[in-house]
Amino acid sequence: MKFATRLIHAGMEPDPSTGAIIPPIYQTSTFVQAAPGNHKGYEYARSQNPTRTALEKALASIENARFALSFSSGVAASDAVIRLLVPGDEVIAANDMYGGTFRLFSKIFEKAGIRFHYVNMQNPENLRPFINSKTKLIWTETPTNPLMNIVDLAAVSVIAKEKDLLLCVDNTFASPCLQNPLDLGADIVVHSATKYLGGHSDVIHGCLMMNDPGLRDQLYFIQKSCGAVPGPQDCFLVLRGIKTLQVRMERHCQNGKKIAHYLRKNPKVNRVYWCGFEDHPGYAVAKRQMHDFGGMLSFELKNDSPEETKRVLSSTKLFSLAESLGGVESLMSHPASMTHASIPREDRIKNGLSDSLIRLSVGIEDADDLIEDLEHAIG
Ligand SMILES: *Cc1c(COP(=O)(O)O)cnc(C)c1O
Image (cartoon, rainbow, N blue to C red; front, side, top):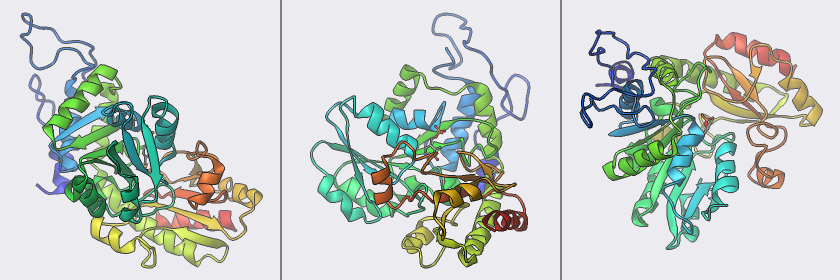
C-alpha cells in the first residue's frame, strides 16, 4: 500500500464489539480477566490500551517500521531512548537540535552519569574523533531546528554501523511524509507527534519507531516501567490527525516555498534559512533524502536590533507568536527567547543561532494572505 492509503487504513479494523469504523476511545484503567491470566491481550492501561494499539500500528506503518511505541510527549519518547544507556555511556548528539532535547540531555541525563558530545553533523566525518569504546548512541535531527541544516542520514548511518552504534533520528520536522530515516539506516525514529502528526495544535504526544524486535522489547519495558504513556483521548487525536498528513504536508510545502522566496526578495530581510534553496549547503542531500522541503523556515532582518525583532514578532495577525509547529495554523517564534532559551547564549551564537532569528511554521492557510501578513509586519 502507498503512503497516503496507509495513513488512512493502517491499524484500522472495525471495532470487534460494535463494528465502529474508528477505534473507540477506551477510557478505562483496567481490563477484566475471565480467570487469572485469561485475558484478551489487555491487562492494565499503562501497559496496553486498544486505542493506543491502533495508533501504534498506524505509526509503525507510516514510518516503514515494524514497531511503534507511543508516549505522553515527544520529550518522554526521547527520554525512553536515553534510558537504554547506563552511567559511563557516551552519546554523540547534533549541536543544533531542539532545545528541549538539549535540556533533557544536559540537565537530567548528565547528572545520571551519561556523557554527551555535541557535534556539527553537517559533515558526518566530524563524528569520528568523538567515537570511543564508551560511545553507544548517535542522536541527530534533520532538518535542524531552527537553522534548517541538513544531516546526511545515510552517511551517518554508515559510520554508526561501522562502529556498532545505535542511530536515533528525530524526524519531527520532516514528518514521515517527507523523510523515512529507518529506510536510510537509522535504528530508532523519534517524533513529537504534537507537531505535524497531530497537526491541529490540540495534543501533546510522542512516539518511537523501530525494526529490531529486541530494541522494541527493551523500549516497551521502559515505556511501561517508567509510565510516560498517553491517554486514549490523546491517541485518538493523533490517529485522527495522521489521516490528513499527506494533504496537509503538500500544502505546508507549497506555502513554505512561496514564503521562502517572498522573504528572500524582501529588501528588509537579511538571510532566509530554508533547505529548498538551491544554494543551501544541504540542498543536494535534502533533495536526495527528502520528498519535499517542508513548511519550516527561519529568517533574520537586516535591522537586527532587539526592538525591531520584537516589533515584527508582535505585528502579525495570521502568524501567531507561539512555541510549537506543524499545525494547520501559521506560527511564528523567537528561538533565542523561546524554544532555545535553555542553551547558553554563547553556544547558541557560535552555532549560528542569532538573537534576531525568527522562525516560521507555515500553516495551510492561503499563501497570499500569509505573505500579506508578513509584508504588513516587516513593513
Ligand atoms: C517539539 C519537539 C520535541 C519535543 O516534543 P514534545 O511533544 O513537545 O515533548 C522534540 N523534537 C522536536 C524537533 C520538536 O520540535
